[in-house]
Amino acid sequence: MKEKVLLHIGAGSFHRAHQAWYFHKLREQGELSWSIAIGNIRNDAVPLLQHLAEQHGEYVLETVNPDGERHYETITSIKKILPWDPELASLVEQGKKLETRIISFTVTESGYYLTPDHQLDFTHPDIQADLNGEARTIYGTLTRILMARMIEAEAPVTLLSCDNLRHNGTYFRQALVSFLNQKGETGLIQWVCLNTTCPNTMVDRITPRPTPDVSVRVKQKTGIDDEVPVMAESFIQWVIEDNFIAGRPPLERVGVEMVKSVLPWEEAKIRILNASHAAIAWAGTLAGFHFIDESIHQIPIYQFVWKYITHDVIPCLSPSPVDLESYRDQVLARFANPFIKDTNQRVGADGLSKIPGMITPTMAECFERGHEPDSSGMLPALFFVFLKDWASGKLPYPYQDGVLNEDVLSKVFQSKTPLELYINDTTLFGDLTVNDQFHALMNRKVIEVEEWLKKTRQCENGSVHV
Image (cartoon, rainbow, N blue to C red; front, side, top):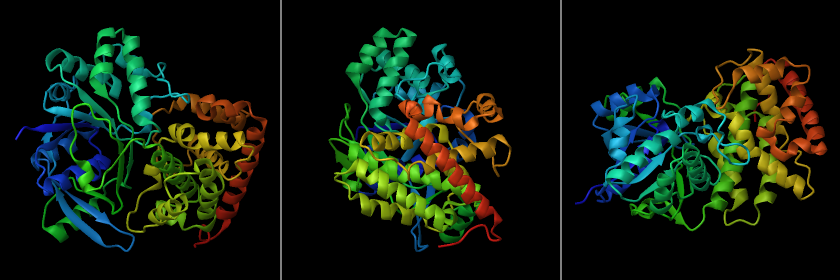
């Protein structure tokens, strides 16, 4: 049997709970010709990769439904663990092999370094470093891999983004070509255009960062000593544009939706699930809560998210092949799952990328059709107050954001007019920065958020539970 490999870049929990699970289900059906090789760009996953190697790529996935029913299965689809090294030699070696038919990646929204108009941000230090020959980003990494592949294998390969980025395949491809052009790699650009495809995808499964208690439960329930188990919700979805240049596994056999265009599913996911998720995390953090489920059980938080989706998002996305109201209800029920224990810290991260990518488009479209996005205005207002707490050292945890420039943002909140500077930031709000209605809305909504927080923080128990 001829081996075919998906090389995955990004050794985090999400890939192991999502794409690896689908490949595992294929193997259970007897489709053994496809397997996964996994590696990482940065050295922050070295212990994980070492433990995976010791366990021969196998680990236990724990899933839990809203009723608290837990299921355990050993995932067997990862067959190669690529050790990290500063030159990414093992990634390049695997990527150039003929057996590698797909190179997929999960690098988070901020890992694409895109401006609000979806262009590559050449001013970012990481991009500058890669232009000078380093490999800090997906662009510098794939430049090394594809250059080696062009020279040695001369074989086509599919580049598959698995991140919550609108039009992820299209925008990634555009950015990659732009990066190569800036480097003067004319020959590689021509090869990429002829020998790669970049399907758009939509991925979905809530996967919190693993905590020590997952290993304890895995041991109790299965008898397996697993150093790197993963825990996720029972819900899972993957929608992919069927545009693979070097063949693909029969993923439709295990529930993957192969479609001509992922746009309706993508927009529903990004605007309804991802934007709401982040907003709940910001609001919950400000109100003194640690987890997403306890945050959404606060009446004011639930209400503003429901209104945002119902009054602003659904009209923007209608008509749609997705039943948007049912999707809304399903998403909010998933957030309320008390057994996931997803943290506000994890979900609230990378807000500087989430605002322009997930929230600003809805606000802009509402204004364009003559509807003031009153409900949507709560989301960037919450993020502003969240950032204000960050600047004053009041957040209960370190805030993580891939595009955060701490010095620049600190100066915004040290100024006499931080809200005006925030509202006028085109990297966050694009053309809305010259919209007087948007300015008035944001000023009003920030006051609403601050008044809500004042009342909430005065309550003995924090807030009123649903």
